[in-house]
Amino acid sequence: MNTTKLTALAVAVSGLFSMGSALAAGGTSVEGLFNNGYPTGMSDNSGEFLINVDGSTSGGGPTVTVGDIIFGISNFGTMGDNDTNIGGGTSYNELTTIFAEKVVTVGAPQGNNNQGIFLQHSTFTPLTAADTAYFDWSKGEIYLSGNGSTVTYTFTKPSITGYVTANNGLLFAALYEDSANNYTRTSTVSAGLTSATGGTTREIIEINTTVDPNDFLNADGPTILAQLAGFPANTSITGSTIGFNGTIAAQNWNTVIKSPEVIGGNGGVATKNPVSGWSFNDNLDIAQTATRTPEPGSIMLLSVGLVALGARFYKRKAV
Image (tube, rainbow, N blue to C red; front, side, top):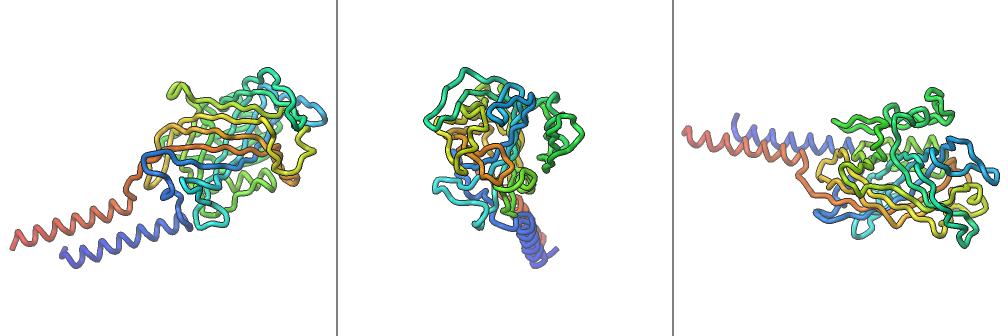
């Protein structure tokens, strides 16, 4: 093959990779916003739903007790050193998550805050096989009845090659990148789940104390949800906090590789939008550290270029 044909081939390969990237994203990927070699901060906005497993109530609404399951969705609205806006209304793809956890302890009462809302300290763990009657990661199904067959909600289950998606006592959350930019937590729960899980799975995050003994998830928050009803939408609950440390168990990025640790903090609970189907809202800031790597298309183009160079050298040598 002569050098003219090899050059044409290199151009064609480059064009194919560029076209593939555009078709896959349809917008600008957020990968370029990750800092190289030091933590990148991201701020989310979540909607959470309480599955009241034991049926306990107070004040005409459900209460958060041991054994209850909470699932939710989130959208990272800003990221990076400059708090760059991403997702809806921007040229960048959106980053969204789905998460699920079970209440394992409800500690001593913290008392009422200055809003008259009763707060308690709770700790949470990922779901196990025993919880598939309510929430099944492997099927992308949620059953509020707790019978494991009557489907209330569905979501696109996370999928990354090599990771078995299941209620394994470790899987806490999955991160998606989506060019649709259609995330919503102000509509129905079904619409929210669809919008949050419609993209490409980028990360699967575990709470895995075997890998990292510092992994945890806890919160100081309201346990009598009826007390939230009298406040305007998105009212921050004074004194509420959320703390989180997790481990990336699988990842699927093109140009970055993440360090395993995910650190979360500066979080709190807020009231939901009145027309929303979620139980309450929350916000949480997280930090991840990424290392930049060459794009697959760049690697292929470099390989073609090296082949062309080698062929040219061989031709000269043969002459």
